[in-house]
Amino acid sequence: MNTEHDLAILTQFLRRMAPEIEGHDAGDPPAELAARLDAFASGKAAPAERAALAATLKEHPEWLSYLARAIRTRAA
Image (cartoon, rainbow, N blue to C red; front, top):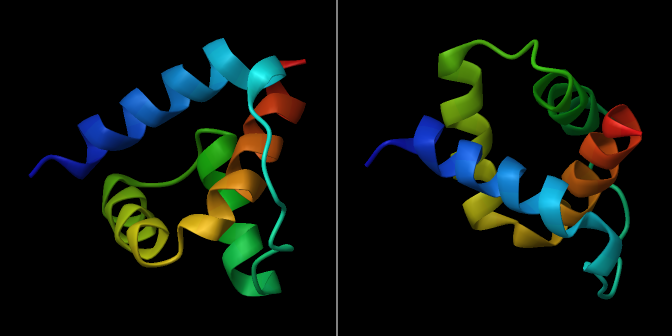
């Protein structure tokens, strides 16, 4: 499985659909994870870190909303 490709697809989707994405916000992830997601959203995460974050997000999809907000903030 190519997690880098999976994350690229997710980011493209979120950028395209950001205004229409809605849902229940489960709250922000822990501060340490939020910092890692912020680095990913800004394009500063190394490939190994992106893969680790992909695995974490698969286990905790409720934090995708945080990532979507981080990407949307940077895209504005």
